[in-house]
Length: 239
Image (cartoon, rainbow, N blue to C red):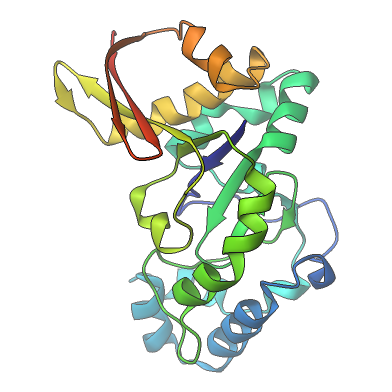
């Protein structure tokens, strides 16, 4: 069972490892090159709008070649709500290895990443499109076949629906919808996506049968909806 997770806008800076090895990202190279050319050649006003940043100093920070920056694991680079709930750095080595092997991250810049791919800090607002290459359409075309082969026949999809623009699942899929006091939530959904991955990794859950039989802390299954290849588990947040 592979697990798909969305990235986060916020990321840690720096890194302890050498700059990115582009030979390991052959499908991503056209987008990375276009991104580099665009941010290095654009003025700050243009970048401010494209990044979605009003702070000029923040824009200056990202106006640099990402191929020269230090890297860290993708799963450690992102720092949003889901990743804070996951708490990768505090997990035992066994659980970290599970995540490295089974969690696939989606990215506006890189398209798709393994958790243990080493990447630099970067800024790429969701929905932004590069001048001469539509990254969404490009990745939708080139990632379909390799992802179909990589993911196999059981996929837990914890991405935001936006990332269907990059890859739409055809394999048997489980996804979650989170309720709080009977209402669908967004912020808490991000937190519990991270919490789900943590509990799955700690319990070494490797298939749908184990997933369906596991009782997750603070979550109660209230309904199962099925449509085509997707089974949606509707769960109530208990606390």
